[in-house]
Image (cartoon, rainbow, N blue to C red; front, side):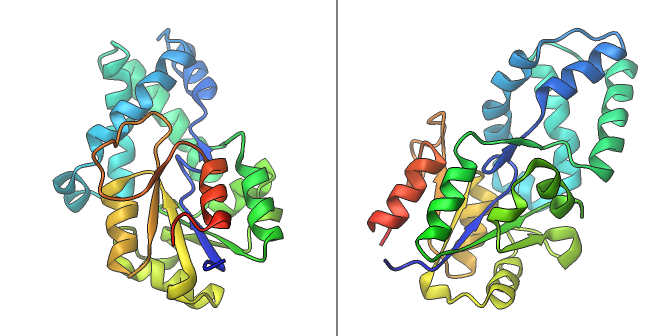
Length: 231
């Protein structure tokens, strides 16, 4: 097996937004929208933001505000004082605990399989400094060898330096390291800039024209890593 260090994005890969919490926050401010409606909007909004000009001219925090506003717009809700109040409530929680805290169904099994095969599992994520705390809270910390949080490192994907930091801190060899992410202009562009192979997690088939390997699930990603499909 070629790969000994496996990098993962956090949000959109190992964890996803807690739409139940978002729906409840909106309801407290008089805005009614089902969590399922918000969840259905997510892949379309993510791809809407996944364009080079947007990524180049915004940072992760700014894209977070855009993400929420576009989710609401796709759900048929215009931004207003009530949605702003709900967003402020969610941001306060995110600042201390992290709102992307719904663990992917196959995350634990995938991390366990890879570690069992002798791989180091490393998270490389654009985050706000609470990523490690959130992973402890949701039970993923024991399955991770290292967490690289962009706020702690002072650099965000797609800057190649954050991947280089991950290699240095994990002791990984770039020739034997692979990354799995879900946003082309951040994960694919960034990993390639660092000289790393990368696989795009694309469960809804939004990236059919992408010039990189794609997988529908973490399980399929682990199958490919362990089976030599990405070599």
